[in-house]
Length: 359
Ligand SMILES: [Zn+2]
Image 1: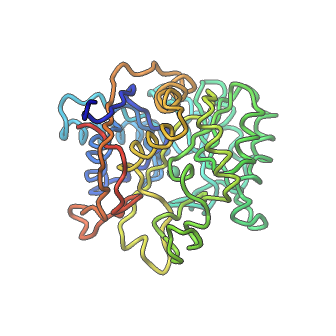
Image 2: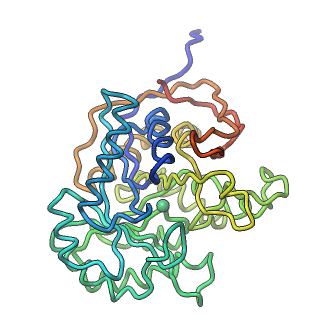
């Protein structure tokens, strides 16, 4: 009997939704992504300050991310995927110009639902000129799928958003779009019912947690509300989590990984008003390997991480690989954020996971 630990070799995974922030936070986060196994393509979300609204700013942001990655690892093949935020003021020309500069994606936030979304959309008819241009030039549009209306309560906002997407699809049938970080059976069913122009990303935290983890009803929460599990869209019910697990494990080619890695300083999370977002960058790959392994579906993990998204967004599948080893690995309780006088608390802080990413 061999005592060698089991290993799994994957193609280098892509991450189709992540937040790198800017300034010292960017300097801190880029190396953590690379060291945690996210060494290939990562979509860099545009909600920094000021936001990425044009192709020019997207190029600036990409260069800043690349410079930081190369300072950490001169041989890196890291490829930040550029996106611009589409707001009610975005013109068709802005979209076409961004596309010409190599921007492949646009991101739409609903008004005031998540971090830095004060410029988000209230009236979706007003982004139709931008969507028309996106459809024409082949820019894929990622939607944060929560309805901005106060009349729709928080946990119903995602299901409610499909009505907005139905109207957009009827008007722009050739527009390629995704519903980001889906959390509900309603969203899974809606995306499944669409054609090849519609995809969805799924995060690791929504595969593992439910609203009980946030509100302090789950066993793991020990009766305490857990702000570090809180994000938008919030995790939903067990049945919704089951639907996400089923579809991710099923090998459906229009559902792929997008982590929505969203680091916030501890003082912004553990506060009277707690910022939304889960910092899952370090724990994600070990958790996903464990999940797919337990379900005897390890062969489906590689396409979920590195093939389906690439195909949907029109990229080659990465040639590089990544190895994980079945060895206990303890997630730090918190990680010092240099120059910011604070720490960031990761998903599964202080827990021991079964797998670790090989350096
Ligand atoms: Zn996000």
